[in-house]
Image (cartoon, rainbow, N blue to C red):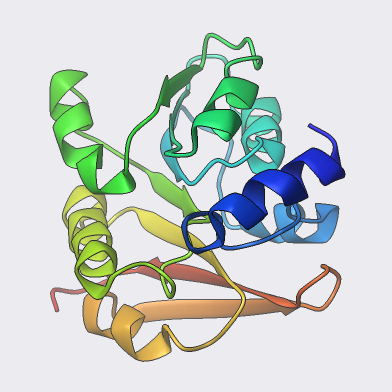
Amino acid sequence: MKNIQFIKESLKSLKEVGTILPSSKFVIEKMVEPINFEKKLTILELGSGSGVITKKLLEKMSCDSQLICFETNKTFYQELKKINNKKMILINESAEMMESYLNEFDIDNVDYIVSSVPLVSLPKETTNKILSVSVEILGKRGKLIQLQYTKLLDKRLKSYYNQIDIQFTSKNYLPAFIYTCYNKKPL
């Protein structure tokens, strides 16, 4: 998808998409950096957009790993369907529904959730649901890697995760914060 197409689609539903341009290669690298690709993985990607992070995940994942992508935007969903990869399952549904899809696919273990969902601009109830389900799914061994363009979510993330590492890059059209969140001990 060309940037101009991405911009047009983003402007139609900015609160849902959360950005007007795809993530830069610098953001993509920081998003995948915390992931140990040396083993078989199950990764959920929330807000896959036009697939720039999706493609990098698929490139680095082993052939027996699995990537489950959630994208609500119909145009981006159609763009993602063009990625022909047997490791990927594509779902045109809200990230709020991830638990029911994991049950449907009989998946017990998720290693990472990679999210570009604009949690700050979503309704508070939606953000809380996504975060509470992510904590439940990841348990004490998985990690949430969350892209944000503001630090307004810090306090809320800390109420769900007791370990948070934050990276920053100014090498994006909007400076970006990449949060790696996990729980070493019960909250």
